[in-house]
Length: 252
Ligand SMILES: Nc1ncnc2c1ncn2[C@@H]1O[C@H](COP(=O)(O)OP(=O)(O)OP(=O)(O)O)[C@@H](O)[C@H]1O
Ligand SMILES: [Mg+2]
Image (cartoon, rainbow, N blue to C red; front, top):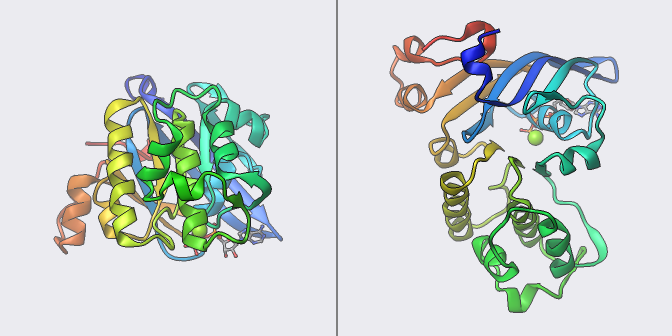
């Protein structure tokens, strides 16, 4: 392994495979996520994006391969322990917590976190007025977009070393999404954070350091921002410029 690269790696996936119902869903993925960098994962529906991040968060256990966080193997850690080890994850479809208020949920997320924001600020980052929402219950009386925004606020409240957001744009109106993007950029600028966002939105992809393109359970390409822009502009020479950080293929 290239030691020059290794010292910057926050999260390392080493030959990860995952099968469910006898079907290969994640097919031998190796990838290094560097400290303080922002990544987007994109690709067709069903290509394995959510499955991959669920494996990282400890919701699914890989069938083979290893995961390292800051150089330590985390394979044996469950979802709670991984959260404790500084991986914050938000689901594609928000989770309900009946009987728990938004305020309580944010308190839990902020506990032992290096987050500098208060609850009013956290909610404003996702376009919600704290006076209206803090005492609401995290149940089905909140709209889909409201739940999604509150879930994102809890991930921002964690301000963990690794933030994983699965389709943060889904169901969120454009105005609130703009605020969210500003907040993510702010976190990216001020904290040593590795941010991984699954997205289908070009605007979100365009603000990350790297865009990972998944297809059929594999990583097909890792674009840096320059090569991604060229790709989106239809320029054919982008392949020469790809900085593929899939370890075997590393070159600048
Ligand atoms: N627990 C499971 N059991 C069986 N099949 C599963 C399971 N979880 C996911 N799959 C299948 O694995 C494939 C990848 O699913 P995944 O949710 O990772 O896709 P995705 O890339 O996130 O798609 P989308 O863009 O629609 O969110 C799909 O074909 C899905 O049906
Ligand atoms: Mg998904």
